[in-house]
Each structure stands twice: as C-alpha cells, then as structure tokens.
Amino acid sequence: MWSVSPLAASAKRAYTGAVRAAWKKIRYRLEWLAVKAATKIIPLFSRRCCYRLALWIGALAASVDRTGRRVALSNLKLAFGDQLFDERRVEIVRESYQNFARTLIDLFWSPRLTRENYSCYLDVVGLDLWQEELKPGNPVIFACCHYSNFEWVAIGANFFGVRSALIAQEFKNELLDPIFVGLRESSGQRVISREGAVLQLYKTLRRGERVAILTDLTIPAKLPTVAIDCFGLKTSVTFAHAWAHRRAGATVINVHCEPLPQGRYRIVFHPRIEFSADSSFQEMAQACWDQFEPYVRKNPAPWLWMYKHWRYRPLAADPAAYPFYANISEEFERRLDERARNLPPMTSMIMLPPEFY
Image 1: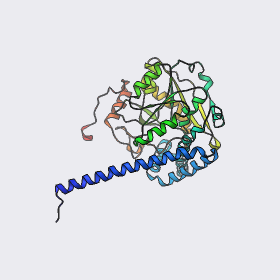
Image 2: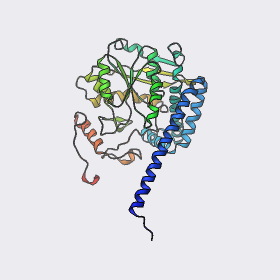
Image 3: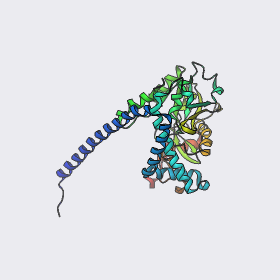
Image 4: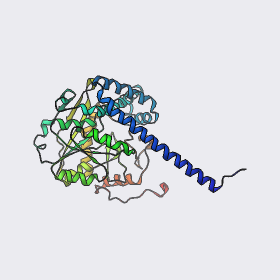
C-alpha cells in the first residue's frame, strides 16, 4: 500500500492553502465589483422598480438559501410553537428574505433621499414624545432592532432633525467597508466602527451627541453581554445602551422601522421606559427588548428570522426547546448565573460539569 510522505503532505497543505488564499482574494474583489456596481445602478431605479426587484430577489434567496431557510423555520417553530401552521411559517420566511432584500436595495438607493423628499417615503410617529430630550446637547442612545428597514432609521432621522452617529459592524471583506460607510453616511450621519466602539460611544455621548445601536444581535457570550428572554428563549445581547444610560447619563429611546405598502416605511419612536435607580444592566436590556417583541409577534415577517438569534442553549433547558444550531457554552452559563444572582456583567466564574470538557 502506498503511503504519503510527510514532506509530500506538507507540500499539499501549502498548495491548498495558497489556492484558498488566492481564491479568497479573487472572491473578495468580485464582491467589491458587484457591490460597487450596485451603488451606481440602483440609484437610477424608481421606487416601484426597487420594490419589485427586492420582492423577486428575496423570493429567490428564500428558495436557494437552504441553510438560512432551515434556521428561519426552526426559529419560527420554537418562537411561535403551534400558533403558526407550516404553510404560514414558509410564507413568513419568504417575506423575511424579501424585507431584508428591500433593506439592502434601499440602502443602495438612499443617496437619493433628501431633506425635501424623505417624507414621500417615510412616516414618523412618536417623535413628539421626546422634544425635550432631543434638544441640542442632550446625550441620547437610539436603541434599534433588525426589523424592516433598520438602515433607514438613522439615515432618515438626519433629515427630520435627529442627527446621530451609528455603530456598525465591519465586513469580513474589508474592501466593502468604505462603500457601506459611504452609503450609511449619505445623509450626514457618522459611522462608528466596532473596534474601540465603547470608548467612541462614551466620548460621543459626553459631547452631548446621539448614537444609534442595534440591540438584538446575538453577541458571543465571552464578550461583554447580558442574558435576556427573547420569545421565551434565552439569548446573549449587548448592554451598551444600558451602560451608556448609567455611565454617560444618556436617554435611551427605542426606535424601529416598519414596512408600509409600495415601498414606504414608518419610523416609530417608542414611549419612555422608566428605569429605576437600582435597575441592573440586564434588567434594562430586557425592558428594551420587551418593548420591541410585541411588534415582532404581531407582524413577524420583517424580522431577520434567518439569523441565529439563539446560538446558546442553557444547560438546564430541554434541547428540543431550542433551535438545532444552539450549543452549550460555559460563558453563556456565566451570563445566566449573573442574571439569576443579580451579579454585575462578566463577573461570574462558574464552570460546566466535568462531562462537558
């Protein structure tokens, strides 16, 4: 029997690694070309064309993205149980893809939004609740979620006098970052990268400015996070908005966007959440999500159901109660322990039983 020498095996690995690196470079360049072309072409389209294109692309993506569709169906099954028939879950998944396609296409179209025409595409409700807090010099955190066109929340807000900075996550393909930063800053807002975001967040708020952050991302439990209930399941999210409220004296305002017919949107500023002086970061993060969840329950399709919202399964939970992709995590058990014992975030040191090592 023939055997491969260590030298040959090493050479094969080096060759494979070089090929993968070369293909990655080519793929990233092709992605850049495609996105760059979209920034030139999509702003030429009418709103009706953008709307119809998003419906078509979203439906296609829902059909071909088997992995994302499986995640979305699992999420919906566990979040709603028997409240939804199988056919309705399939419809919601398709609509969720279509809503995300609308968000992306409208981001490319956003350079055509202006102070003069934004009201043709955006309705704004609830802003009158916050006139005092939104006066110049008052630090404000806009807590948002991935619901409908979340990109236009900050972009549109600059046009009706609520200019803010935005914390955004970088892409794996670094070539795309300048393009998306340019699109997100098209109305005059400033993008804060996640690298060093906490310090930039603090400095921005201390200057009496405003910052928008997405609060429903499932963040790795090894990072500064808290455990909250989301559709009755535990998940790990940021507490940056709660921290900013406590440390920088920032007012927390929940904001979300919801779709209207024919490609229009409504931006909703929520009523005030009263935080007690001794509220924990976890309690504040939970209260913010609790204000969003009824909207998602009433109309689930605009939320990102293909996203892995519940990456962690509590050790004590029934595996069947969580999505197939959820895993046991020692760090998440620590976040749950902090929640149960009302400990400060990132202080628990409990460990998993030996059988999990």
